[in-house]
Image 1: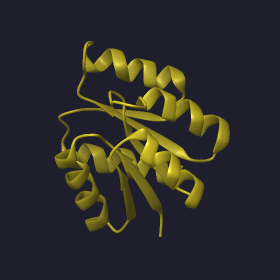
Image 2 (image 1 turned 90 degrees about the horizontal axis):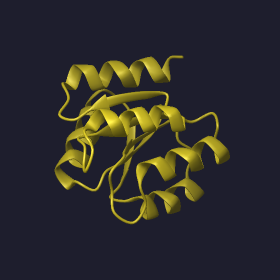
Image 3 (image 1 turned 120 degrees about the horizontal axis):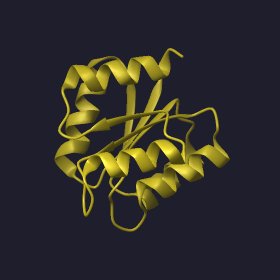
Image 4 (image 1 turned 45 degrees about the vertical axis):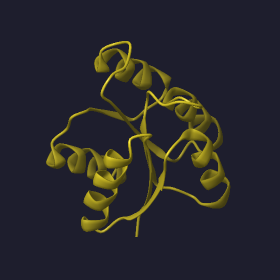
Length: 122
């Protein structure tokens, strides 16, 4: 069973994505920020990490850079609803930093699941 880590500082988004993925048959762990994700990275191996970009304490771009360096086989899906910039600006930066795919919030459930399946079946 594929293991996915979802990182997002919005509790409702974290719960929604987790439920969607679990219902689709994936094993899911969650982190409410990048610092919590760091702890999980040391304890578990993930096939896919879904990370928000704009978060306090540790931004998603930092997480992407860390994963590309320390876990190059882990697929990365970046999600963002924006912040000071439009979501597209953050998502373009995420792709340039090393994310394998991007999804803009709000998203269609089917769109998110399609991206996850594409990344895990590469």
